Image 1 (tube, helix red, strand yellow):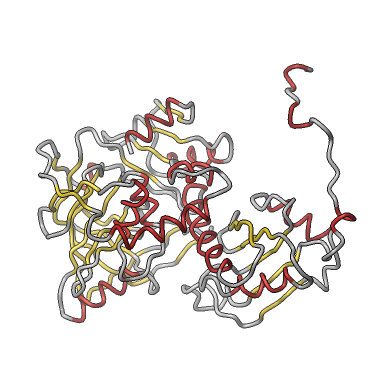
Image 2 (image 1 turned 90 degrees about the vertical axis):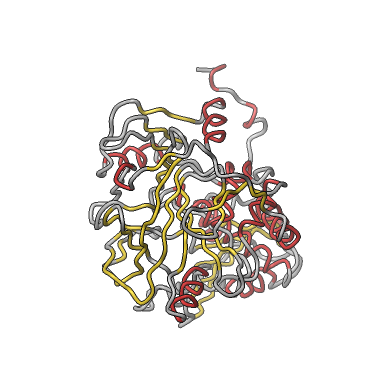
Length: 438
């Protein structure tokens, strides 16, 4: 992560905040203001109550994610799926075990920046932490993101969604009456962060996906309290275990969809050791922000893209911006009814998302939802090009069925009439530099 921050500063993509900021709301407010403006990465050099600087907005847009996986801005989906295909081949060679570094520094959790993000949050939360755990029976490792509410130096409370792998892994340990050893990794290198957001088959390891991104094994050392292996580049490590048959109140918390998840009885993480690299940088992630949803959008788009390629022809690219639950597919029309066929296939691509799907032609920017709605509004009849799938289950955490149902929008021009819908353009407009004129 340090190399990433240095590279961003060298390219003019980093803002430094030297003024002291309060981790109670102020840090999040400044983060949001930057994201709504220049959208650069921010390094807070002085955070009240902690001696550690805080970096945020590192994974702030799709273009940067493309750079992290080594591809151009229009090729994220193919590259992501290529890495997905490489992952099985990395199993068993994804790790290089090294000696435990001698310069690690023991700290308490209360020494870390304890950031409270939203008005109704129950308290400080760790939002960027990757949880590393191992299946008790198969030994397969898992990386995944879960929010963690600070209670004390010895206890955090975490939410494990019922569709998440860590939920299933913990359930296996709990059935045996055992604790589940786990480690929280804060401030990881980009390959690990991206791998933590990947959706892998349960007999694959996200560590192998990270190794595929790097093209090399991940250097790791042994944990103090378990047989888990810690990625050596991690800035801050919290070792612990998830208690069996123990649930305590957690929340409310402002989640990624832009509203609060209310108080629930959730899992308890017992803290055993907390330590850092020398002079660590803490990674803060504002839930629901650009940084939070960019990876989720890109990953869901890649999954949908892979699904569609196996079912229908003519698919060019997929975007899930700007809200994750909406999906836009760009196609080259090949026959009448092609767009509707793509829509029906897209509804089956993801069990949680793809709530609102749109299909557009090659000339539409799928990352600009204004263009998508323009295409739907101008290229045909709304009543004939809308598909509603009633009572289709949606997002897993949806006891009131608010995410049930699907909406499809055919925003393509009528097949065979491309000439009538050619977009107007001004010659040489992309070559104009206003500084030459104003």
